[in-house]
Amino acid sequence: MPKIYLSNGIEFNSVDGQTILDAARQNNTAIEHSCRNGRCGVCVAPLLEGETDAAIDEEFLGKSKGKVKGKTEGVNILTCCRVAISDIYLDIEDLGIIGSLPLLTLPCRIDSIKKLNDDVVGIVLRLPPGSDFMFCAGQYIDLIHAGIRRSYSIANSPRTDGKLELQVKKVQGGVMSDYLFDQAAQNDLLRLEGPLGTFSYREDEAENIVLLATGTGIAPIKAMLEYLSEFRVKKNIYVVWGARRHADLYLDTSTTGAKHKFIPVLSREKREDIFCGYVQDAVLDLSLDLKNTTVYACGSELMIRDALTLLVKNGLVPSRFYSDAFLSSK
Image (cartoon, helix red, strand yellow):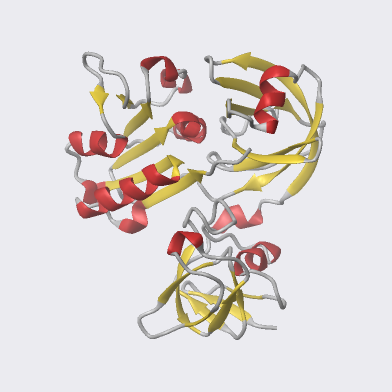
């Protein structure tokens, strides 16, 4: 039974065939992750010592299945893809409280449905009384209906009534989105599993917070804004939200209560006083001291990769870039 050691002294066991990420979860230890299938790269970890094998391809790293041994300088692996063959040492730390949140599978009902624009619908889910579903603002759930499972970010911070808000984009030929847009009705019974992912606010010394989103990536950003408002976090907060056209900016972030500067970005439409181009370029246009900034990014894989590369090149500390990639599925 191999043992996994983290750089901050946390250690836990794994069983044969179990990915490092699953072993951590089983031992109530949270380590960075999002997609759980090797595509987003959030769970990347330097392997300092020991031997691992890949259960699935590490698509983000461009690696196929195979064994990897740690070296003095470390080699990167994805914890959602790899299993430990021997005791291993990873240069990552656990995330504290997130690891103590129980992963639950619960029934839920649709409390309300509201069209936010032509392509996005807002869904509010009602959980059974006493279900005690706990999560951190920024995490997501898997929604399950008729054997179909899809991942959606929770678009609110924890509420006293326990309800969960989702923002679902219309996907051409998408089985779940077709149901939610065209067939779903109030009180429909579904199931959910969660909380999932580690995208959440981290306290640090940076004076600036940039909340970066494209499309429905604004959903967990809205949840974070509500959290920052509730706990009166006193930092310079910037929300940079990208869309193709102005009509796609369906959310008024001022309703969250958080004091922030809102920067809309359009890629397919030019309007006066609105930045036209890419969200990462709009961040540079703010002329912030990126060494004193933490970035939370949610949206497409391409946006997240490009934003990380560009912002780090211009001074952002890599460890202060947190992300949640939205991966396409039908």
